[in-house]
Image (cartoon, rainbow, N blue to C red; front, side):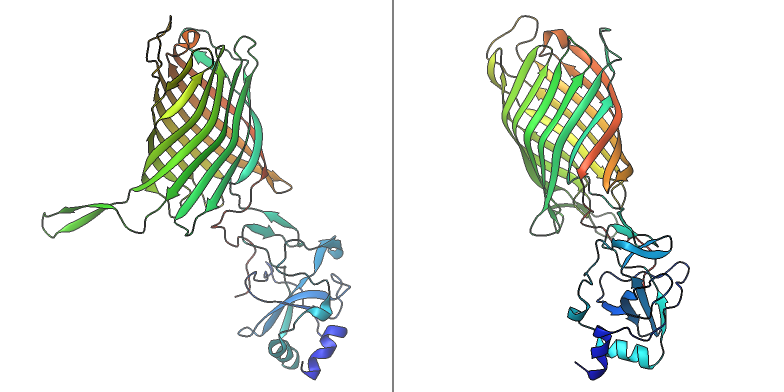
Length: 402
């Protein structure tokens, strides 16, 4: 270590930090920084700063190493920094840059500490999450859920409670995504004679965006032109789904689907998909039967920071029971339509609270007391106990030094 540098780690450096610009510059999360003791200021009596220097501007940006309270550094340490300054003697100083900054009298200006991608640090040094991945979370919530039936047997006093775990795992490349839904559950309350409950122990989807189009069309009107059909192929599986309604209990032991994705976003998190596959289902009163199903679904994250999500699906199911039952056809059917929207209202300790609204329509002939169309609306709140920044999140904070 150069002899000039040893005092930097042991005593205050004779450098005056100027007031911040408006708005103050923010340290760059991707660049190395130095922890130094500079001349005390009214805002930072300890003189401990996090420093990054810009050789082109001949300016060093110094951020207080603690949160400001009433304009002065307080006892609260900075959280979510790239490296702590707990022991100044162990910090490796960028000798060349710091030496030139001192000997050539560069400008030293107060700044704001760095913040990781997906987080924002305000001018006091407090950090908050501003980017959320609603595909990775543990959630629970409640909604108002009135229902209307074609036979007039609807109910305006119904509510729904839901909870579950959503996970996504990046594949070997950023073009592959594994989606998991664990204990995706809903309970409808408020109608004593119509207890309803749905839960799926595990749902898995494999989503892939191919490097090239698997199919294309060539037209020969004028100059030959190729038109790529950017479809992708995937699959999914479901295990142990339980549905209780109308005094009946249905248990899906397993379902396996093949899927065609007609559109997939670059981050592989949004897609439009058709999946078709068989399932084995048990009616606890009548026994097991075969249930083929087809679903057209779309899942969309509408903005960069994950604040808006839209989900829609249309499912048709055919039941093939072994015996005829009074009050229903021998091979009953189900048709389910759902469109939902979720929006982040605010965050509590960086855990998002979302507004959830959706509309649902169901037609079924497998339950004698519920045959025909049923329409329901849901509006309420959902709280996520964990929702980290999206994998595509970037720094969304105060202006940074170049």
